[in-house]
Length: 307
Image (cartoon, rainbow, N blue to C red; front, top):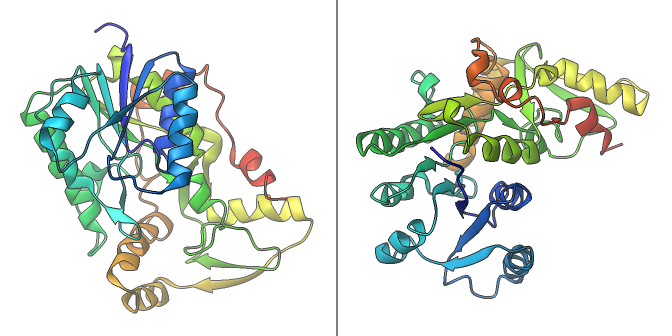
């Protein structure tokens, strides 16, 4: 497979999508950004799209409600990277990708970028729907014979590190923290810009064709307690700590609405079961080993921005 000169990003104005577009432009790819024709008066998205255009990106108007427009958009690119939302507290759209499976492309990177769904067969309800839907898309891709790369990027740093691994918090407290269980289960935290950089490296790499790659920066495999200790070092004081037991967490979760329960289920598997660091990853499937030239952001570096 030759160099993927033309890259189409779907969901390119979203939280991760905008980073994927920027990484594609930075990598010198001929970059196409799909946007909905009904974008309306969302001025921030318009300005973001125009900023991409000024950097050389091509803006493509297409909709999942207009199949021919999707076919036309996909036909423009060698590689399609999809970053539509899979988060229920926003909008869960994973199965829309089934409409892309009939397209012709050299490689498809579907919207995953979190926990590897193939390892979550025993996930708890209702959060398992995210993993189940991603597996539906995977099976459709493979049955259609479309070349693919799946990216398992573990925990977005902005959501986990910003809140010291506490659900519902995105800024670190200088006073107190709630530890989930004993706080010793290991998580894996990745700067979102690094996720994008590794993804764009992978689309040109024959070693990642028809494989799952894992983004597991060795310095970022840390427990919640270790994350908190780094923050305490920066602020020069020890936080007041309370412990939320597994039973207490599950009881609180059941009181939330459906969308919140889905997200909290994911926290449960990461922070109480340690699902992300419970298995070894071969070097030929781990992004920091495949692409040592990419300098990833460590947890210490990431947390420093909040000081």
